Length: 467
Image (tube, rainbow, N blue to C red):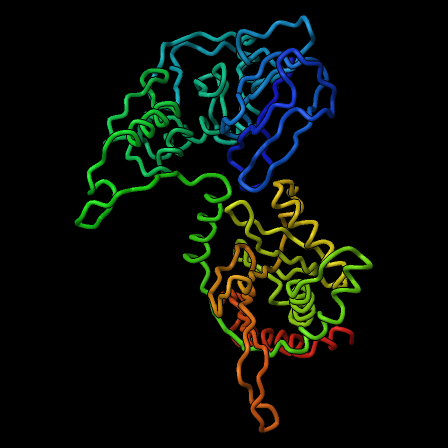
């Protein structure tokens, strides 16, 4: 019998939502078959089965948000019975100490609430079947925590990462925790003071679990609220909706707060005459569309221009991580795109090695996949620089927030006609404001200005890209 676990798809992923089960209980499953559709904080994915057999039981239904490394299903032989506990699933043995001696009753078992449970004696054979995720087991070993003394909060009593983290916190602070780690996370995100709210826990020994927080949120939303519980203004304000942040919107919020709090931004702007680049695109767009079936946009030109400037000013193509100033040789540009009432930033890799047609083809592919929710992790990862273009919305100028851990972002605004002095004469030209925000911890303002100056030169003289 095999456990199907919620996978960790990326460094920032903490939970995932099963959008759709492709197989149903009792179905034959071959290794490599698409088992379910997964929605993470960044992207939707089709997840293949690692095992062959029959889908014996679906533990987590569609639409359920599940912490990483929790059991979501079981796969086994057709006539194989489900175990009474997850402990009989293929688990790694616990430390050798448990094999050589019995765990005595004088060491009380702890659950993540910090309360003692009934004393028990666990034999070496039983200790080998303690249901525990591999990550939780490694954390426990590293922290000197005996997993036989931990009561898990996962399915069938499985010990998960959050249980060990809670006990590590308990051990270091001496605090008593009466709420599961996942429930606490949800409560904090929703702004619920679970202690003063007097939420009744339905978990083991009265522990507050996720279902208790969900029930509280439903009841709070249905109940009439006083104005002071909704807004700080003196008059009552009618509320249209209250929606906890989750998924990609939550990740965006966290990263933007992180960026503004930790990254000292230096902003600078230049007004560019884009008449020549308009003329160049006008001459090329019909031929390229007829030959290659794609439309080239100003974003494609700007991505190429940014890559050319980054090739000359490599320190802009950088980041600060763990007090290390990292300069990248690859020039991977993220293009911010609005899709499905949210923001995605697909990555065009090695832009400096692509021509305008190659950039346009890749951008078109990524945008279409992004709006269909089909981007892979690789297609939204490892950008070293970002371009944010709000020109299509008529925005004349704006400030953008650097997407950590990148060191800079370029801001592109609308095109507009303006009087310009050329050789002592006033002419009407099409202009655009382009800005750059840099991380002042690693990029000086002067360097940022030189980079922006080079971008302006390329924009006003696009033929220089041929040199």
